[in-house]
Image 1 (tube, rainbow, N blue to C red):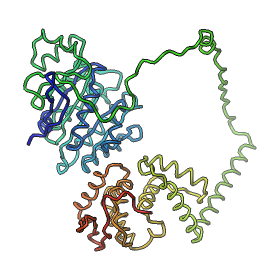
Image 2 (tube, one colour):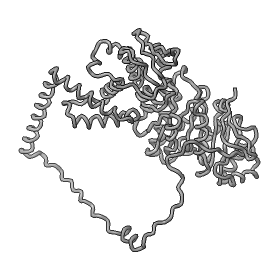
Image 3 (cartoon, one colour):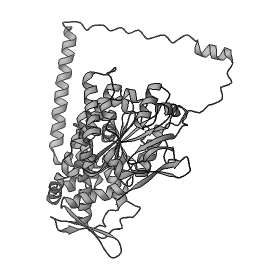
Image 4 (cartoon, rainbow, N blue to C red):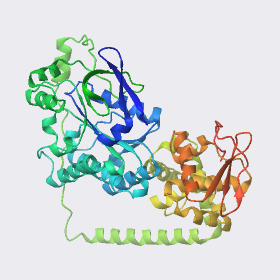
Length: 499
């Protein structure tokens, strides 16, 4: 079956299409100088194919993060995660079939290579059962598969080059279809570029790049100068997924735009030369002197006494705090405050879409203001508390034997799905309506309703729940092992489950 997506139109005005299924088997290489329209082409390809195939975008400049709002891509800010975390994220993205954008903006060149290699490694090394078809788009591919060593370390270059080679050479059998874009073919490693069978060549000025582009398209050398005259957004296409002979195409419009638009000319400010001279050449502010006096050694006797007294006072304060927390009244009061703080955080409509680290910092600040007692929970404990709070379960309810059983049954799910399981369990145990797709999406931290439905499908595959529809089109979810079911609920309801 041929699945054609529209890229734009030809010089003759006919639709220019790309065979998506053929692309998955043959891969794509895009070349064009800066300003030729490569990123626009990639955006058009991603938008047109988003409903049909899972996607992952390696984005060094943060140009594609706007896909999230319109098409539900998960934006992963690489600077907030280490290499191991990104590798695991790549594996989970394939397992759950979530389209992602790896935003590498803000990282230096070496960190970009290392984190991109880790994420690509996670996509590549997933178990065979999860080798679903996937487009992997790498913008500015010459950064991640350089032909020669540059300013980065050899280790980082080898990691990134190895990941890119796996993507283009061995990825096909694993369902990975590489789409790589580069400003210059001469800067891209040959063993990476050679695996592509489809080509889109844009405006190019250097003779060596024009000659290589002509060779790849089967054109004569004297025709190579045609690449110099291509307009922005115009490309020459060739390949089994595009055309059997070189074909000029003009890329169509896109629904989304990059965060930073192309700079436009602006009128100069009407500033007098004297004003500019006074502002630009004004004396710089004096620098504060940086004097660091070494501490006396050995410490003076009175300083030793102060340190010992402070240490003794801190020990006594900790002992008093522990004694207070051991009393049932204090423990109950502390739990109530924690639930109140979590409720205040989750009352923000955007809380479900914020990173866990940001929510944890907000939680710590509120804890200092509320004063819930010594020993604020660490990040892992906060993550568990947040999962429980999103499901509408208080700390007191969580200690009940029934809820302990629910948590134990959902423990085999990925951590980000356990809260959804608890939300459904709460609706079933309390006789409430089944949560809507919107409620599930918010609890899962996404704006994509399709992703919310895929979470339920995954739970069904794990034989934890059974989803059914009644005659009125309302959804009923049954917890298999607990033999409890939710009341019928409209999956398309606009309001989330009240907490």
